[in-house]
Image (cartoon, rainbow, N blue to C red; front, side, top):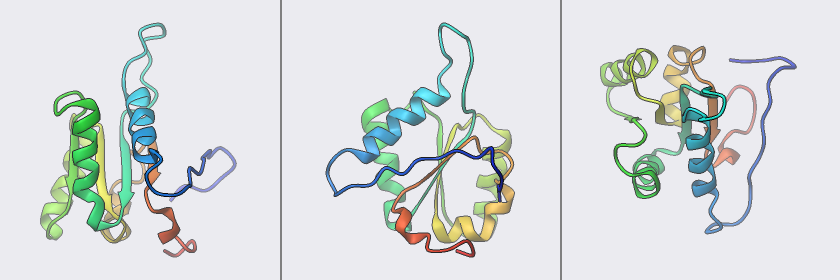
Length: 132
């Protein structure tokens, strides 16, 4: 995983229902779309890590706010072979967003660590220490 002084981040925390998911989706869209002034894409690959119970909530919310075709995404779940196929497809494919559970990411995260430009941890309190 990444360590060092050149890593930046932020924490968006508050009570439920205030629009954190929508803010994260807006950030994702702003990072993956090509800027019309500079012609630059700030993030090619975005990884959202969340509890497994929220995987399809993220898919539903992305489709609700951006539509089903604007952002290509993969919801990563399934057996070992399916997850490995999803990770490989995300690395080399056109998908810009992958949503993955904490447990699956813990097991298969090494396959993604050098291709992700933006990492969003939903329910980040699940991360209690560096080993987790």
